[in-house]
Length: 164
Image (cartoon, rainbow, N blue to C red; front, side, top):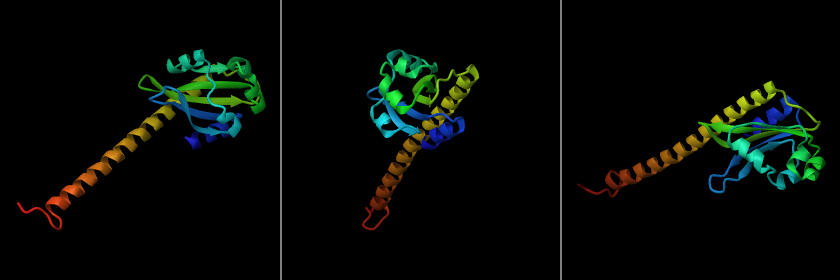
């Protein structure tokens, strides 16, 4: 994820980008990767008006020309040097699992083609994330199976094995 936000930020020449994923228990967006944004800005937490969160959950991108005015608390964005932003949902199987957000340093109106491109990038990110989660779960199951097999083998075939 870190490499994705780095490439997006550098190749698109934006101020920064980040990926936040919904926490399964709290439903809040948790930071997973960022590039180009200060630690002070990131430490301040997620800034998503309720209407933007609803749009992301419903799978609609949110492009904002005046980011400081839109988010209601302009000072952190002004200090960070952010003018506009684009949030695209990370969706898989019709469900939003998070958001990919781009920040520009100058006011910018995102074209429909740019929004569509970033939405496609968001879909690919969601697939990568889901595949990594599935791989991790499969690895845990495999390691558990190996441990169980070793315990069984030691009990029935190893030194001091039960004689049947």
